[in-house]
Length: 214
Length: 294
Image 1: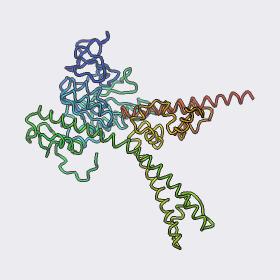
Image 2: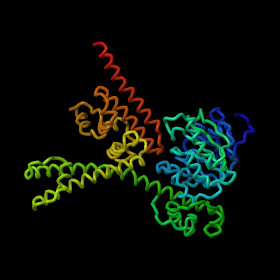
Image 3: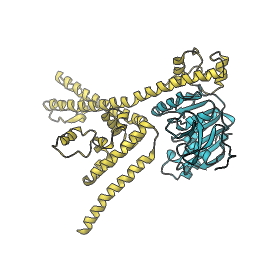
Image 4: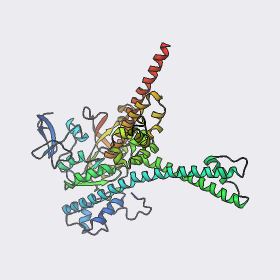
């Protein structure tokens, strides 16, 4: 984890916060996160994408990508993504968090908030451009794999899907492992799964998935 | 958001037909437009003369998405919880008017027919009859109003059952849609409910007894409208206070999650179920103990 040669995207660094080595991006603070000389701590406990990076997953992100972010919520994670990525489209369907997301976007030139349902990509295909480099997905609805499949139309040929699958959103009664297997089977309809990793200890019952379009 | 039956130009970008400086029109297209497939919109916008270059396009897109998201969020929030407040109050009004008029119908009918019944069901029955005299005509017409009001109340209930899970998914799952809507209505909105301490939520709807208690004339009420919840009503009276307190606590959390994040968290329901099993188990255990001693 302290390997300095690890492949972090340009714009993401390890910095020391309270004596601990943590991920950080450079931008306007958003939610009271610790900062250090303009760098904002990117907490793996709050962000599933940060947990994936922290777990050593090869996200394929280099910095400067065009990103479609599904399930942006209040903008906690997407604010960090917009710090190191290029044009970032942030889709969120619940109105209350969108209010906060707009606040986050006001401080960033490359973040475009969209109050849209990620299950209905045709309602934002007239806004989000084709051939994005990466889709980051963190939606907490049933049918998370479906959402990824439906949105694969936005991804370029060798682009990356970086998804956090939440077992409890699919079926609380089932064993998470079974839920993940079913989700992966659905994903394989239009993706080749490159890597999966459980996001514990940062997030319970979540599976991080890296995939590329088939 | 609106269901548009006509879908022209499904391959057009949001900026097409929008004047370059018109952020309002751009925002409207972002909110209402659609396309079957994405395209290289930045390039097409530049080619169409909508933007000077890619940077200019993104700057305009940013303005338009910010405006659209701000407006859409405000509209959806306004549209949702306040509409539920009106619907639940209208449902109660319609149903209490129906009952009141049904009493009038029953009283009138009793003076004319030996087999006259009472209540909304009887009014419905009467409404289906053919009048045989001018007096019947008035009485049956009045019975029809009762049936209509009762139907309206049922339709409002269906509307509430459908809409509440959209507005407050966790609260609706935990309390049931109608009780959830009542709590939102009593609080005056989801945001006010989310800001209430759980002790207040516990006695919402029991204001009369609460104020009697505060004036020192009565014991403190254990529950308000949440009494209609199975977890309170179905719990032994000895444990009802704790059941109501626990339920109110979890409902308060659900309302906060709904208001501040909007994300459905099924684990909240599980926690409530677990706590309720404990509380009921406690009573059963003490029953068993005293039973065993006898």
